[in-house]
Image 1: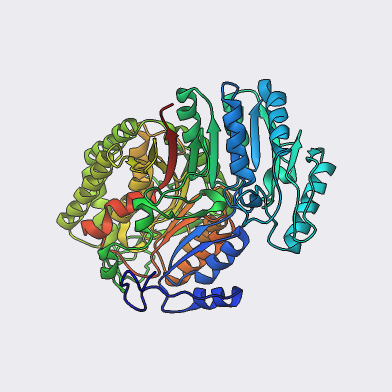
Image 2: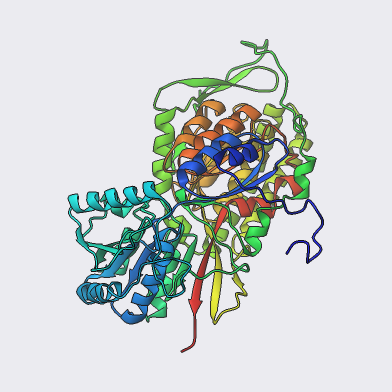
Length: 590
């Protein structure tokens, strides 16, 4: 086919092999992009193997997709959709609808219909077009499915299997339904990768969403209801990269496909998929040496003729909208550009990060409020920062050892950048994909959730603003570790936040050793994203430690941005990193 269309030799290369071939490809120094489809376990291995290399990575991993059926659904259509969702390819599909969530009022009726339909499924050679279910891949997979089903029964599930003749040759397992499965049961949490459906009931849409999201995976989901208002209320709340309404297993190159959480990251298909294979030109202009220079000084105890301030003001951490003392009670000296100690800044630790993440998670309303409301708050932050311009100019000049005119220009750029992201909060919006079916495919941009940010050490307030503002503009909540030398600018900035109607917990500031706190953030299980601007070693650590929970990471690999350059310091790349794309398929017509 490649020869027939005239594709130049070397553009497409096909290699057949086992894990050794995959390992060689993963480790090859001249490979700049990897796309992997497979298990979450292997995805973690690849993430760790590529940590610090700068290779772009797309991982489409395991799933435990919920199939949600509401009481007003067309039950016969839902059953046929369920057959395609779970018994297609013997359930050996990453997006298989293996978790049935059915509204309690219709559970018995739906289960009866499912059993009748299961009794008509035909097992045999999968190359035969008249066959519904083929064999599993090998003996080990057959043993795994059998043992998991047995475990499901031991944990309280009720097994039902139709009377069917299994072919004498091949690794066949009968279609299986388990009812009365508890949400915490193994079969409700673990990917089975076989023709096994587990069923749970719910009473309200809120409970359905909670059950659907009660899993570490987030690849796909299916919602069945005749009420379009209910469907469009539930679909955005599901933690899944693709949501099908009254349909299942719909795919097209015009629409992206990929997961949330431990189902991987990145997208294949659609314009969001194209971004995975390109990079912005400005990345090639990043410097190996800092563009903004830290002041050089030798710390001094005291300066002749200098008088200490009458009141010794001690900055605090900023967690949950409140100033808090560090858990360990320790602090670090903060120096001005001459080497004089001007304050003691808290040294945050693991427990402070834990408290900050808890505060961020409790402010979830920020992610669901309208983009317009977020924009108004961010505009207010810019206005209040401008009111205190003289104070911040003096602080920037003191810490950076620069003239006040230069400090004023930097502050004006900070204010301008905040205004930019306030304006973009309700303009970097979603789109509709042109998939060739009788449906509308909504590509909705959603916030990651909680993002840990290690701000660039050398860039002061400008680096802090340039990294935090795009994240919160898109609806994320952040735990930020500011520059150690410029930490006082961050602790001054939270006084601006206090007067700007920003809900507590949206921005949490933990000062301290950036490398130590970066490690804590990267390992944290309740953080969805991690941004890091620091050393190459630190970048490697962040990507490696983030593999356990499949955090979305953005690191600089030891290269430096010119934060005064609008290409490198602001723009769509920051907004794209702050969002995930959810594709919602909505069919229409009779």
